[in-house]
Length: 110
Length: 116
Image (cartoon, rainbow over all chains, first blue to last red; front, side, top):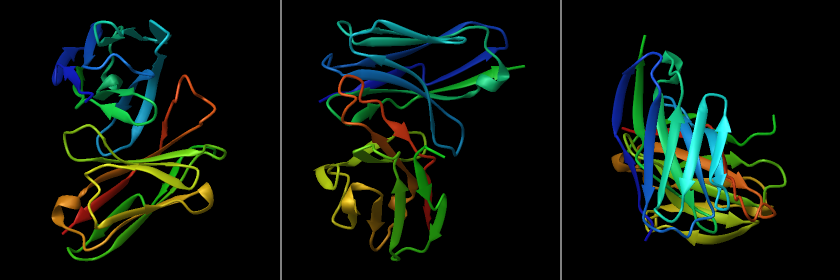
């Protein structure tokens, strides 16, 4: 049974810092891994999708990497801003359904 | 608007009442998913449709829950005799079967249910 773990559960950093969020999964047989952002009380905003054949994806200040063999992914956020404050969720998929982690709650202090 | 839409966005009901939620997927997406998210947790899979066929139901989906996708287009999720434990955000997502390698799912804004 696939299990997804995100560390840390919460993180508070001063504005401008570079930071890394971690996601680990127990079954390496995945189709893709996707990172989402969720603001309080809102739905999910897709940030980056990494297909199983890929190693990383980049979008603006975000970079996500995938190491299937070790069951790990990292989301790197460069030059963090207060607007980055949100919960970040990672999800892995097999043939269809997503399995989500419990998220990392990020607070960027001005 | 070509995204996934959900209606209503918020629903407050009394314990014991029935509620129904609707999801309209991205047009031409043949896969549709329902997830439930409780406070402080990640979304959990409830059920999945490929066209009009419901192919998997999670054990989270008790007998009080039923989902349909007539004609393979929009979907409804009904909860009968609601309980306070049903209070959660209900998320709908869709994807395209043609996107075999990626299976990227696109999520709607969710329906927040509060059972008093």
